[in-house]
Length: 242
Length: 272
Image (cartoon, rainbow over all chains, first blue to last red; front, top):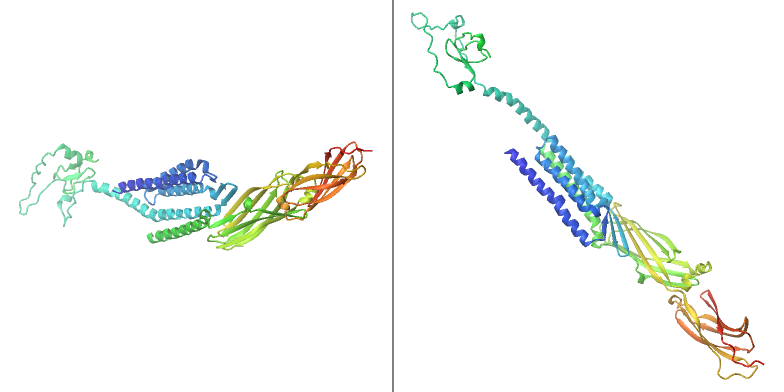
């Protein structure tokens, strides 16, 4: 869901930035050059090429910025890059702030370069916003990453088959003393009971997915790593250890 | 954290809005015509002449209808003739014009045409010329953040002060006087001078009749300046034989002397 949101953000940014920094300026420049051919600036002869180049770079950088999550270094880098290109774009559009106008015997030179520099300063203030967004989201992003890293092994552990918990002996038990299965009846009948019947053979697929071994004494299932049966306490053979 | 970002966003937006407003109010008056510089056109230049000095005035006005005061307004002009001879060069520091005010004045300069004439620059006296005005206006706007410079070049035709002169006819009487008596010779001359001289008093013209280089007849008249003037003077010439005869026209127009000699036909008399 989040991935799709980033993609739509990037697409929308590409569209709007291309419109704002390439299409509309070219239309406006066409209007100005057609209606006021006497107006010249330093970049006027190749102004459309400059607009396409810098506008394209702004669009690309902004799109890449939008496609990265807030708080990432990539987003910060592309955000600042887009801002730098916006400054260059503005400088070119305004011809460095110096415009010439020739009309009949009149020649007018209009130098507003200082105002253009102030405008560039105003635009570059947006860099603070990019940095602020980065710094405020960075901790959150890093925390999320850390949590994800922490959750990954826990999830792996959770995916493993849970060992059967050993019943807590309430008092002294013979199980800890004898390797053989025995059964103590409630009456005076004492003797060894025959071993329980082996469990029904399970399907291969189950054996493949659930790696376990059976206690040869009580038939209880145990992890491959177990050395003793948790139910009866019998030792597993050495070759059964994984 | 979000509140801090929001606050920063608002501050940046406020600064940018202020900058856009500053830029707009700085630029808008110029294309919209609220800030106007009216420099003199060729038809507005007025000339006058007195005692060899040409006095030129050309009005200009600067209308500051913008939002900010205009400061360091300076007007510089240089005037040269077609051959590049500098007639005037001056810088007028006008100073500041508060917003909404108009400053009107005029470019006013004089040049000594007589001195030029005496220095050998005869062009503007005897032939038409083209006076080039180069006017530069520069000022600062929007708290000196914007520099505005306007240059203007206009060529104003200059009519020669003395555009032409000559003798139309030398007329001898059909009835000859008795031998030994002077003969009345009618000499018709013309003189075309520039309009600029129209206010000056008429110039004295002297017409001499020469036998070789000896003056044998003499008359005086006046020439009205500033027009194409023509007149006839009658000379009383004492008949005497010379190999050749001439009529000499001498006139002083506003300090510029003219001395021209024209051949005259032989006197139609029988010399003893």
